[in-house]
Length: 103
Image: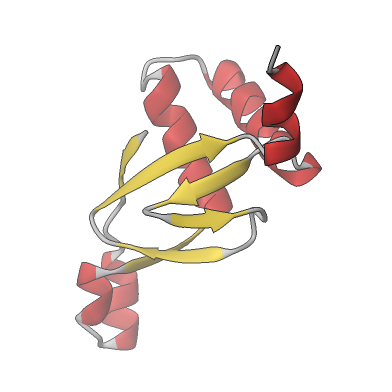
């Protein structure tokens, strides 16, 4: 899922560092929120968005899948990743789950 990363002007002004204009630190949970919104659409009802995000965060916490953000794997929603203007978010089943479905 291709996610546009929001530009946080407040951080640039507060820190006085233009580096934050090119790279934005976000938690994996924040990125998943953006990815869920992108996947279900901006016009999806708020309750559907909340349910989908909650299920996604629970799945990550339970180890049902891992998240790859621009080539880096994450298993914890509280991890922080530094992103440019766009992040590519991918979901992977752990190897133990992937082999269970082979016939």
